[in-house]
Image 1 (cartoon, rainbow, N blue to C red):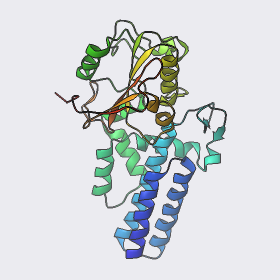
Image 2 (image 1 turned 90 degrees about the vertical axis):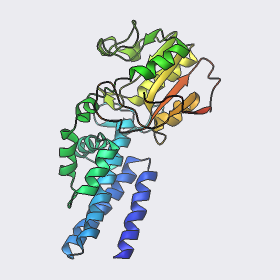
Image 3 (image 1 turned 45 degrees about the vertical axis):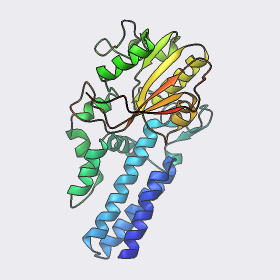
Image 4 (image 1 turned 180 degrees about the vertical axis):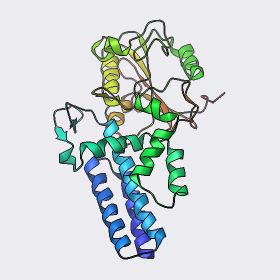
Length: 291
């Protein structure tokens, strides 16, 4: 049994290191095959449960990667940052149903997900989906809307003096001038000093990749864009766009203005300026403290 547990620990580490959906799907399928074989062999419940855990962790990781991939049309995703290489879900070894379920599992805050793994005798995809629908984070994750804590915005507004909120609604706009969903902000020209707290998943056929791409492009054209985003250093959008600016990592997890839960992910502020003079600058922003 010890050898099996070591194998599962290796698979767990591999999941964290994966950056491609098909790689994670392969690990998920291996864990499912192990689970079935272990049940057939009447192995100890703890090792069967370990296979179930690896399967769920892989599904969650695949969901995170799918959320962050730029989507083309239908069930096609852009595998390259310039969007020229298209990849269908079936080419990645998954179905539309799996893609939908895994992205819902990825919406579960990390502490809630880990709590589920530690509290259940049997770990199933269905159980994780029930958890995804049970919390107050689900609705806001499903709509991609995480409202900026006012105190964070106020700190940054004192420093930058924002002129426009490029991704907002009448209910949560931080500036008098703002672009809403109806304005198709990605098709607008961004000028001046811009505040951006984008949808963190997918809004229509657009993902966070498209918002960061627009912010990067706008900075190259003369705007200053301050981006309030998850600190997802394992994503394509982070490496293609966030690294071109000044990055401030926020200590701890924040509480959003439209949720009673603590953020399921760490947060960062990415500042993209004309000429991108701050490329590669990283700041551990300890001054940003939860009041």
